[in-house]
Length: 378
Image 1 (tube, one colour):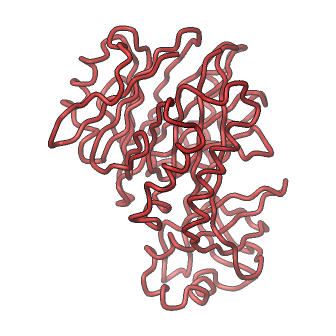
Image 2 (tube, rainbow, N blue to C red; image 1 turned 135 degrees about the vertical axis):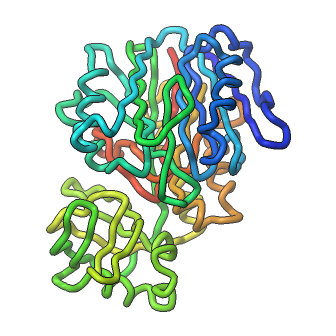
């Protein structure tokens, strides 16, 4: 497995970050870029001219990760040559399916074969229900197959995101990449780092990702009570106070509020909140968020025979970027401290992260977490 990187910005154009001589041999290019640049046909044409034989997957972001840096309105391109691992690429048009669950089911139907070992998903982040997408992918999926990825973003506008395969990315698309064979070693980790506070409450009325009542009380009114002065800044301030969702197996997922409806007294989250589920309010803890990123990196090393993978993919939530603000590069630096300087790092800030919880191989939708996938070939 060989990996190299390029980056682009408006001032300098394309620059080489690491050269491994992969122009003709690269079979996969993973590209992340700012919402106003990555969908331009010229950018894709330039990248295709550099890697004419590679499949190119692009997604829009709320910030681009390259090495230990976090950039905005740039483009990062990581070119990979898998020497032993077979790849299959598919693109799903969301409009062709009844719902996000059926999109996920279609991904599994098209990619599932006897030697499938990993699915990487880069999904539209504004038209897709991430929970239902993940549920469709998981349906009858063998437990040994690791699924990771993320939902594209649009710099916090929450209006339109772009994803594409072998063309300039477009709205309403999902790309999935199947990895086949036994030569690939995948590590994965996902951690938050938020502090929980207040009592555990029960969801007594919800519909999908819309929450109406907690403990029989209006959810928005109760939420505002805990936010105090910050309630006047909703929905933006909600990124500072996500909910912890308790799973039946004892694990927890973090759920971010996307919008509120004052008339209905409801809150819409970036993932489902089932009725009778238990939840608890969380608040930002800067040091613990940064430590959470490092812990995700440590978790991704569990079971790996090679402590130094060739390639590390980081997908972190836009909420973390907003909360950490000027300290945002510290969470990326904390990951690099785990794996060292001889590894290629890329990633993006997303509208949602897809990764297994550590107690299960089945993938889940996460919010407000740093998720890490490591790649190496034996």
